[in-house]
Length: 252
Ligand code: PEP
Image 1 (tube, rainbow, N blue to C red):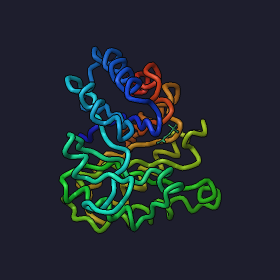
Image 2: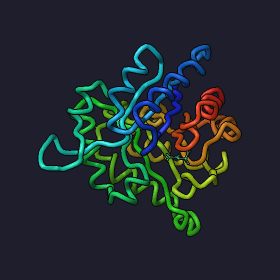
Image 3: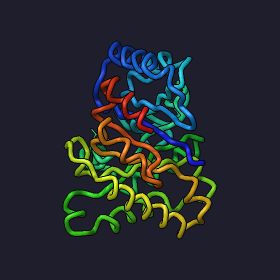
């Protein structure tokens, strides 16, 4: 059975105190829930990772990073390496979020390097991709998603896919309040699983968790998560509010 995942991407929100408060409140809010086969993840900003790991220590909440540089070390001012993340206890890193692609010029090529670094360091990634509104309007969305996945991930050996979680995030639905319909999400997730099966095999395709991201809220989560190829969500805005994030976790 595929693992279900609800992951909250906090982006550039929450200082140290607020990060601890949010993790404590989330712990209180979900401690009596039965999280069967479900991972609950939060991604605080780099400076709050250590504190957040301590705050989440005796809970089922996992703390992951929002990004990582591909190089081992060196003259990359302002960047963070895999080794630095591992040294504080981080096991999973979000890569390729559309905000990083748009504002920080991340490309399929640089993301392929980052994925290689993830694997060299025995880390896991939540790998994000998704089409722009113009791609969907011109009915290019399947081709765009296929090229994003194949350019960054299809150089991997089949065995490496156990370290990959996919997150389909149509850019037009991120932070806009506009959500893909459950049918649109299912259609794309099914397509993604089919291209992974074609490149590798059915076993790899059936095992990979594919999250949907883009304005997921408690009110729409249940319908989206009910689709057979949707294995959970990557949540932005709603992850900053305990009641909303808990509602989304309960929906799964
Ligand atoms: C995100 O940034 O990954 C995201 C899905 O944001 P939101 O839920 O706010 O649309």
